[in-house]
Amino acid sequence: MIGVLTKYNINGVDYGSYILGNDISTVKEIARSRGLNEEIESQIMEVHPIPDYMQLSDSDFINRLPEILHTVTFLSFIAVKANTISAEELLNDEGLIHELAHLLANIDGCHKKSLICIRDLLKHLQEKAIGCYEPV
Image (cartoon, rainbow, N blue to C red; front, side, top):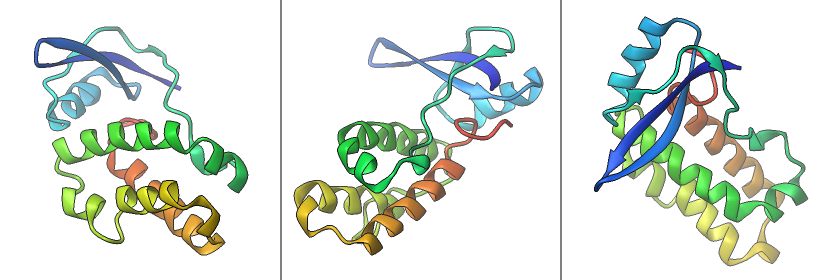
């Protein structure tokens, strides 16, 4: 996929990210709308986006839950800052972060239905984290 590398700062520490897209003016608009005060650090180039965990088998999904939770936290940060999703939507009793916490706390009690639900919530978050999975 093509896009740009970006940089943003939190409490004096620089962090890197990316925005997928092939038009620099659109990418700049998205950088502004994401609300991170991102600086574009590259020209349009090949970038390696966050893995799409939707493609994992159920057992691989469960085995990679800590990694998935880290990614969900990052995507949530982007989507909340961009006002494309609310903290309530992520944290309520049926929200993605809450459901992942349930899954991490009791993997043996996990049913296929809850994994399907979590995958649906993850897909929704991926759509709301603009520039992370789909080119802009």
